[in-house]
Length: 315
Image (cartoon, rainbow, N blue to C red; front, side, top):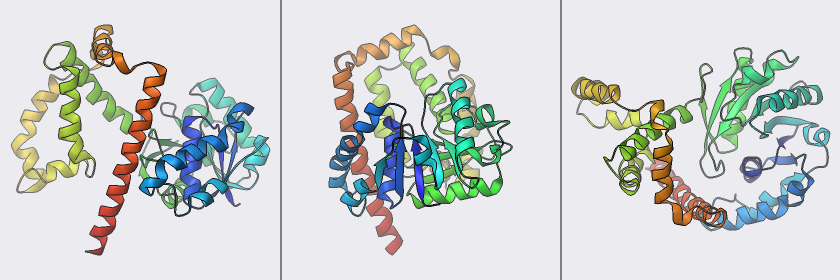
């Protein structure tokens, strides 16, 4: 067993291929769409060109590209793989059919991981002969620049499989977050949903405009959250740490949470308000250009955070 298999080479799949390849893994990529495979080398070259100036294309960018190989059949991709990273459509019936096929082809020791952002492993792997080696490894887009990966095992996933997956993702340079049990949306999307709901409500009800809302996160909460989470944030916001903070401000925060938005915030009116704010940059071409800008900024941020971490470790 010697390589990583990527099944599905769309936006997320090829980013996963890049993640593993720049860490030194050999990567075999398969997609049912031959055109996607035909474009794979060019897509990887473009990712290298964008990230290399920031040191995010691996120690040897040419080796990163050489580590990735498109293959003609699923069997070729899976033969001898230590882990399969599946990034196919987010449709339960398709996922079930695909995992049944993966389970039938892959070696008994191969971990079968899905990039699913909504479907739980128990919903598509239950009943498979190899169900105990199935789990979700949910990335954040784009995974080669945002390193967290949420590892969500099903109740039937073997603990040793979960730990081996954690080790592989960590070796690839990702930051594994281990879920203790399954929950819809995993962790990141549940947190994102709450922030998004309240953001939409504040905009729709006229408390702030779209620019002001984004500035609050980008130049406020986001500045701290780029290098520490909300739990460490509150631990530093009171002399006695988190217990002190929650004792002082817990009741106030509870009151705010009680009046915050829920599902009612996702309305057509809110969508129109946000859409109007971005009307000038919401065509396919302008969105793609803005995505490229975002990825360059994320690469620069990753470079900065890596250098700061290395400096702090030396002190």
